[in-house]
Image (cartoon, rainbow over the protein chains, first blue to last red):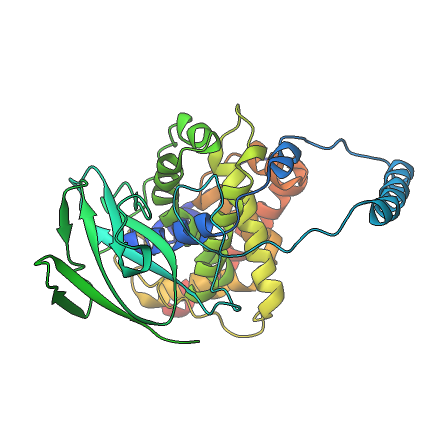
Length: 196
Length: 186
């Protein structure tokens, strides 16, 4: 069968291939990365399972596997102790960035994204009253566009923060609505996190 | 100002580095693939909100299932398979087939087409929206995203002959309907 190309199809193709997206939109990319990194990292078991490509089973084979799985589930239910529910605020050991998938309804924390443009910086960290201004608590991830981003859980209320650039220089957030100069003479920004 | 998106193949080491846990590599993949992914999703689902949702879901799924990406595979077909599935889910969930699709961000009237003007673009989108999802998907993957039939067949599980037939039917419909538009304008 010949490839279906002619004048009309070429015209349609050309029109549809025309850019309709925000090329390299750093905000969109940052949103996607925050969502990806904020979701819980798959467990070791899950990663092992992901590495497997299950063989295609016949109906009879699938039925046998299903029966075994159900039986194993009943056995495990009577044998295994109940696990304590995971603290959703716990930082997973694998993630260098302290992120949470969403606000924690129990504690009322709200996942908050920070974005900072610093194409020439070697490192950027988010420091503030919410992490005791510890430089290693919330490193930002650099996107190829030179935009740095991180998402952290914040309690509703007023937070003072800044970006620590290259481990040495504090800079206020140019996107913040309010900037304060604290008693220590360092530039800081203010963020009001609304309650949910 | 808009332009045709680059479709240069992605450095094959990039998805492998992302698979090995390199977040910078994953970020680079997202940045490189985002425009094409959004374009495909927009043409599939017809509005920006749904398209962005499908694209974001896709990349989150890609990130968490990089372990399933074959080391010797091409990244784009794998990405578009997941994205096409997400688009189908969005379409099924929102059930907006009946309404005339509004491509809010699509209009780009300086496209090098033989028939210029907003009407031409609008007509393409209207015809595209009337195609069955499978035909629209196959047409976009082959003619717009330039995936080979073999790649589309491998990632969608649809037989090669059926895939060619879907693209042919989509082309036939586009050809006939758009010829009518041209005649009406002439």
